[in-house]
Image (cartoon, rainbow, N blue to C red; front, side, top):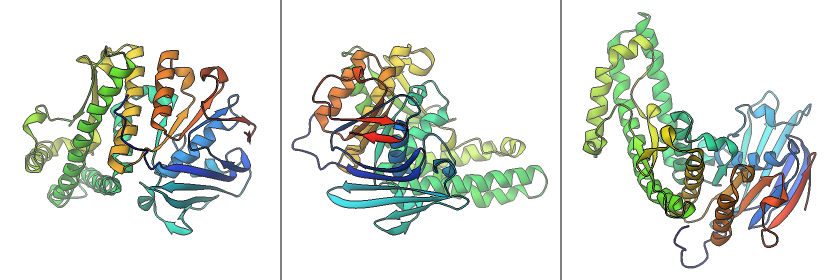
Length: 381
């Protein structure tokens, strides 16, 4: 599905996992294969917990809960997750320590680090059944997808995103105070230049990333659909009708400043900021038709799969190696042809992959990697 690069990539590999009182595991010590790792078992046995741990190690958050306390095994006081992995050939050890009633600790090679220092160390791409709603869901879902992808490729982008969110929160708090006559409107003049400077950086970075993602996603969509469908991805800046006329940093800064001024009274009335990257969207079309509004279920599922495969290629092009691919119970959601396309791509590109499934029949016999059985928090190879 992509042009094969010359020579073998130096792969990002997770070599081993150690769980202590994490989710439904009292103790798990697991070595992973550098290729495909298939975790089979009935529902609620602990398969997704393994996927969750790797995703958490990548972005410092779970895709299933916002509460770290939920990661600790029932009635246990503390838990830990440790991963040994190689990044660009360099061995690393990453550990997360969770204690009830306390903040988590993150250790990289034994040294405490903060969240912003974690991003970009271990890159992953997660594809789960919830992602099938990426196209049909609200713009916030697509922004989260875009921000996670860019942050892994560029930790500096993640820092800027955190900075923007802090400024946005301060501005929104001030808007509410002005509305309640507890502050003067002129105080916004202190925050607006900071919001604009940070917001413009985010919008330009997102737009450049989407241009690259557009090319990759279209290639994937054409391969999956047998050249019947062209997928186009575009970054839509909320409130900006003619984006092609706003190309430079100065143009975008000028537009953003004017919009904040024009919307100031409405923002005060509502107590929230109505313009900025926190309202933008990723617009997807197939053969010129809006995929969210008019795409068939088959087209939408192909579109999500194409986006995920494009995300793999995007991260490889930005960082020099493929991320670890995490497929959580998606085999049952894809038809036989899409499953075959996905597995063929993984094998051809030699991507380390963790797959959870309930049925061995989803996979061809022989040559598919290592199969593990998962039952009640026990994993056997």
